[in-house]
Length: 163
Image 1 (cartoon, rainbow, N blue to C red):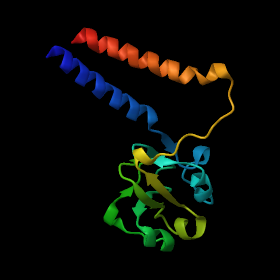
Image 2 (image 1 turned 135 degrees about the horizontal axis):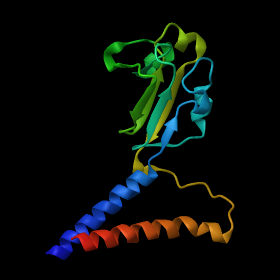
Image 3 (image 1 turned 90 degrees about the horizontal axis):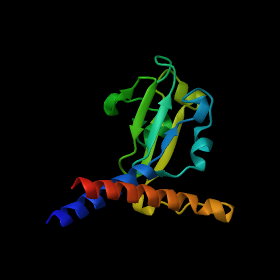
Image 4 (image 1 turned 180 degrees about the vertical axis):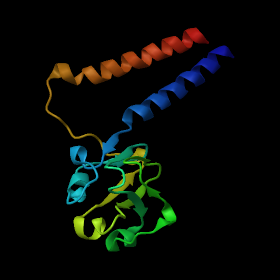
């Protein structure tokens, strides 16, 4: 009975580790942050957003905000408080469901005239595309699997001794 309990704990730990390792945090606009006259569609174009990732909107509090809107609200820059307005200056949005997501700045005409809007598509974890192949030497190809295997073995050993 104790052995089956250990296996369940071990498998649960692996699932949590795999999910947390694969999740990414995206700083919207990178170093520029959430600001006027930035091309957020170009910024998002080469990124793959997956359920479990997070978006971080950095901006001067009071100067901007972040509003989640629908497709029409995005196209027409319609400000609506029905979905809530984020105003902290460091707004963290967990991407919890797959699908299209639209965000705008609702301050003044920042969306309409200054391009403060972002559209992304979030993929489910199971449909995430395979990573692009990268030219590496044979020695660096083994680093990640070896480290990952070591971490899994370490946690498994610790759990085995605790139970």
